[in-house]
Image (spheres, one colour):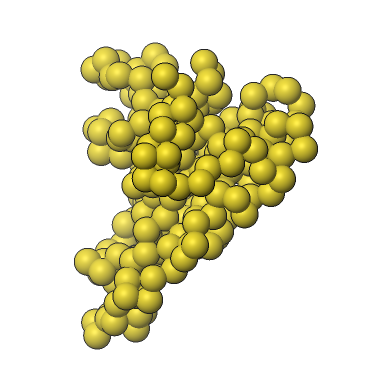
Length: 231
């Protein structure tokens, strides 16, 4: 059964109305949610502009007070990502994930900037969907990390094919870069660089390794890897 068929069955079981196609994004925005990010581009090679949208719940009870460092209020409302393929004059939902994206704020890390809207984003380019997440804290840590997850439409699903990550220290600039080919399981790690200044090539170290075999993972699958999965 194709993933959007699985979703349709689940929606019908819950008594939800699910359009086959719709002229705009609003059909896939539930009551009590809003769209906070979107991007358009051709994902399946038919020349039409497909779309990715990110939704965020609007529940006042999930905006919590913070009496420590950081923002006075922390928005812990969940987010979900949906991918829509252009079909005629409308769009068709083909993939979604309701659990993977981080919320705007984190009650356990009140100094954390919004990983998606402040430090990352979504884009569709050259047939690929890229989801970028950044982790930067205004207090409590010098460490900054930025991760890019790359998905490709194949066999009617969005498969994760790559992950690129960079981590650096805001005080020293010391930097580590990693890049994974998720199809081959090969990882490239570059150390010795610096975010703020040029470093002689002789001091840059590059290491390649073959990672343990991993199952194929998809945007609409039960779990997606974090950078720690590759270490």
